[in-house]
Amino acid sequence: MSKDPVLVTGAAGFIGFHTTLRLLQDGRNVVGIDNLNEYYDVQLKKDRLQELDNFQNFIFVKGDIAEKNTMESIWSEHGPFKEVIHLAAQAGVRYSLENPYSYITSNCMGHLTVMEMCRHTEGFKHLVYASSSSVYGGNEKLPYSTKESVDQPISLYAATKRADELMSYTYSHLFSIPQTGLRFFTVYGPWGRPDMALFIFTKAIIEGKPLPVFNHGEMRRDFTYIDDIVEGILGTLNNPPPKDRKSPPCRVLNIGNSKSEQLMDFIAVIEDSLGKTASFDFKDMQPGDVKETYADIAETEELTGFSPKTSISDGIPRFVTWYKNYYDVA
Image 1 (tube, rainbow, N blue to C red):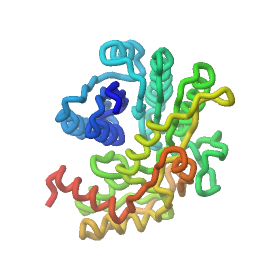
Image 2 (cartoon, rainbow, N blue to C red):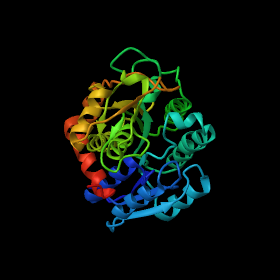
Image 3 (cartoon, rainbow, N blue to C red):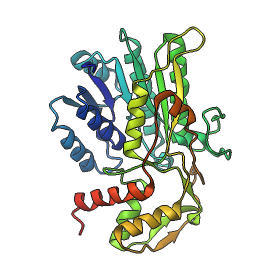
Image 4 (tube, rainbow, N blue to C red):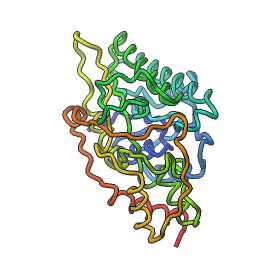
């Protein structure tokens, strides 16, 4: 197993934390960077980092990936990094309506800065970066396939993620940098984000408050458990696109559960896990949101060995158990 350090951006985030944890458990040396922004509870991010600090093979740097000097300093002091898992981003479709500037800085400038560092690293092996199922926009052809056009995003968040994919293609074409973008589909699980449906619904049911349910519950999502996502990320990292003269070493893959679940069925599993009944505040569809997501993962399975195993009936109770322990709920 390689002892070269892996750089994980967004290491204090939900997916970044779990990915880093798995790498550390596998014996890899990991350097994590995160700016610990206040988009959601910073204490949750700090508590994730505290879990990672139990490993001697982990180094954390607080910094902003969009700042060139910061990245150069990390590369100089802790690198060079020949493998990078780039998960740092300003997340959230709805928040992009309120604070658009942060999305351009974090998602576009941040992505460019990471690529620039990889570009100037001799013997660089693979950049795996986070894209999003949001790039499919209002596409009604299901399941979503990477072969379909995704040039009509319906949120600024989605537009920045599509821009990342296009920049990656350009850099792979110009500089032959092996890159894989992963279009994540609604990730959930322990240590999850407070702005995501599972967290919001669990909290509301426990507190006896009505659940905000958009499009009057007529929504479907390809809910993907965090452990499956991590397996997909690491399987991808170990299988970079080949360098040949026919095409740039660049690709985009879906990473989802490949099963579209009714939102109300999802809520029913939460109710069952908590032993409590929910009340509802049905709302119209939010701007920038989509009615249904569903991933075609055949190519991902073929290229990386990715094979999701966790159903919502298994994954949701694990989150509920974590939530009760973390917040000391009886």
